[in-house]
Amino acid sequence: MSQGDTRFIFITGGVVSSLGKGIAAASIGRLLRARGLSVQIQKFDPYINVDPGTMSPYQHGEVFVTEDGAETDLDLGHYERFTDANTSRASNVTAGGIYNAVIRRERRGDYLGATVQVVPHITDEIKHRVRVVADSTDVDFVITEIGGTVGDIESLPFLEAIRQFPVEVGRRRCMFIHLTLVPYIGHAGELKTKPTQHSVNELRRIGISPDMVLCRSESVLSTEIRKKIALFASLPVDAIISAYDVADVYNCPLTFNEQGVDDFILGDHFGIDAPPPELDSWRALVQRAASLDSEVRIALVGKYVRLEDAYLSVAEALRHSGIHHGCRVKIEWVDSETVEDPETQSLLRGVDGILIPGGFGGRGFEGKIAAAKLARESRIPYLGVCLGMHVAVSEFARHVAGMPGANSTEMDPETPYPVIDLLPEQREIADMGGTMRLGADPVKINPGTQAHAAYREGVVYERHRHRYEVNNHLRKQLESAGLVFSGTTPDGRLVEISELPPEVHPFYVASQFHPEFKSRPDRPAPLFRDFVGAAYAHHERRASRAQAGGSQVVAPAAQ
Image (cartoon, rainbow, N blue to C red; front, side, top):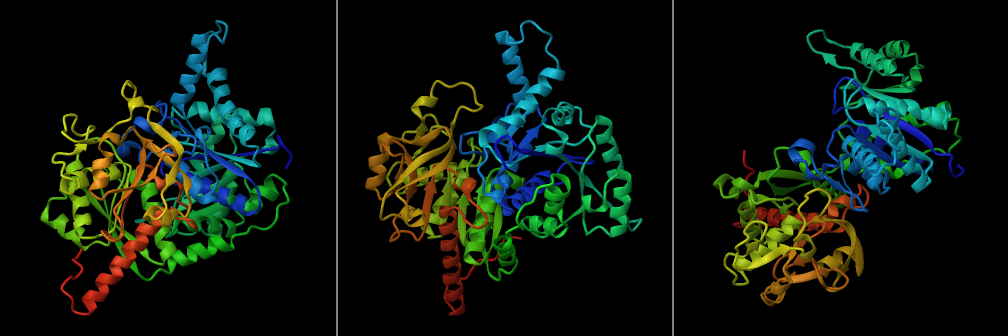
């Protein structure tokens, strides 16, 4: 396609939220990429927060960080993992961000005293955010997911904006895809299409007629049901897609392809002649994931474990690594406030690896210290991410380096050994949102270390999200006690990776950055990959000892 000829796909949702618009957008993006086309996906969220950075993980799930340092919705992680294309701060827009931009413009006098209104000022800003992605990346397709459901008050400005959009760029350059629910009513023993009919009608009342309807259901929809929905939606049957439940979300692009989704989008709607999709490698990945016959158990010790989406990218990076090594990764979700309980101690001693992910605040911090100590002393493979590195350094300082009471000043401002302290540039910052060290920065990795063995490069770029760092005033004391700082910023000023030497521990590595954000299904994050590899080796060693009648038998999982 020529420059300026970008096509636009808008994905809306109806009936209920959490149907999987993000997975649908990512799957369509994967199919278009498989046919040789370039794609960028963006998410519009209707809440008033400027970004998810200050929201509780229980409210929002994880905060995904882009290369350019934006704190974004977790769906952007799906987009990147499926399409293998990096997103940016332009890829996640909230109602708060839109209103904030318009109000700042009004305060500067840019509107010359005019009355500022939802239409046209808010809707114009929304449309501008769609065009920014197309203009800045010069891609063939921009896929825009509209958060929430049709009928939500807060979603109306976004829906009005995309209703107007074809007027500006041409209807043939736009496509509307609507995702709805076809529920199964157990006592009636049948699927019900009425919610989908009402949802499509609600969308039409706003002025948008869908070009394709994706129907979420537990099982494959029959041709009769698809014909019925097609009749009420005024669409051909080929435009009614059965988005049925699958065991693996990575199978969604394949099920869409089998139903001709990419053919309909490219050929029927846009009139684009593209080569057949190259899906062999993706299909092989899905088949490999489905045929794993061994399992490792990883304890994820955190404080938001009641909502697994709070650690979504971590869980996916573990899964990618398991596929790489040919094993399933079973995550044992451990509340860090329960680590001292005998039942939890038994579980931790029986797992194949212990992972402490990122986070903020002091709740459960001492439990994480105890988990890291157990991993170090029991030679259980350990991976710490961001806060997990602060935990590892603090634990080592207390119990090996002779620094009783060592801590992060985030947890204890009066600690006698502040081994983790605020970045100097963070000391005067009062606002919480968007003020941390964010985004991709270079990391220099020292040769002869486990980190270098994982990356096989001297300098890598990894994404950060934190305020606190290893205290340089205490670095030498920690190094003298045996802690290895295997990665730093290129100038050596800030610690990026810490580890214990292989002769001391088979795998005890922690990073200040978040490697999980760059993990891909077919290319797992190197630190996660080698951590799971070490856990698998640990599992095999223990199984061999148990089979030989050794004394160290794998402890049973807590019930």
